[in-house]
Image: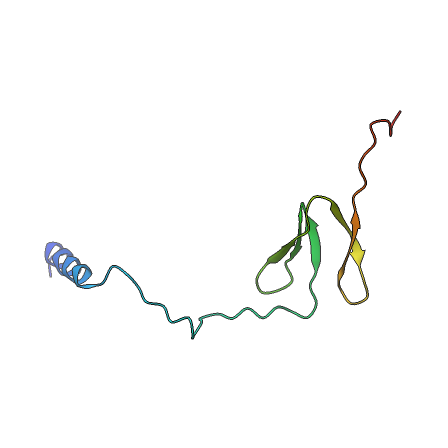
Length: 89
């Protein structure tokens, strides 16, 4: 088979294929099951868990600071205190 004939055959096959794909969501290829324990780390305004199979995060906003984890593995959050202009004066 020549290269030109092969290219024509491939072109005809592509023309017969539909331009869309139907996906059956009742049978997912992957199902995310988080771990019981999450290794939370603060990254900016998010708490991020990288210990699960998929990295996932929770938005906590700019006014919270993670200061630790309790005995159940849940993050301990504190309100950020505003910095005073005269703190170093």
